[in-house]
Image (cartoon, rainbow, N blue to C red; front, side):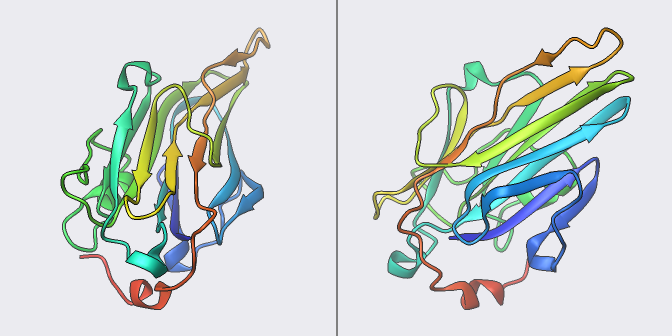
Length: 209
């Protein structure tokens, strides 16, 4: 189950728990907001410096074993693309700081919920990039049950067979010469086939510090 999504696009925050709509520039035609499975693309244009990212709070088998038994990991850090920051943390209902960092555009590249300290897990990716006049950027976020081979974040429920794999990528096209400048692709993958909606009422009553 996808409990919360948050976009940060050039400092404008859109938070599903606050009732915000999906921001303009986001294509969500292939994304299921109930399960958190599918593909999201974000389009950004305009010369200058930009930030764009996505925060996700998934709950894996919450109805069967709760949401405080999960842990995260950052894998293949050596292949992380330049300009991409990340964070895994408790989603700031108790001790985490990921929500504050994400909305400030300053993820700290750390894992606050490793395998030895399971808890409620959320993950975020944030790109910082520059565009020249005439250039545009496309960021793609996807969720599936396919584990990536390059840099990714994972969220695991050890009491179920499911896991989430989150990675990030950016493509830039256009510019004075009109030559595409692709960088890496994002795949944000999740084994969420068994997710259920139980427990939503309890979580929705919680408030961040």
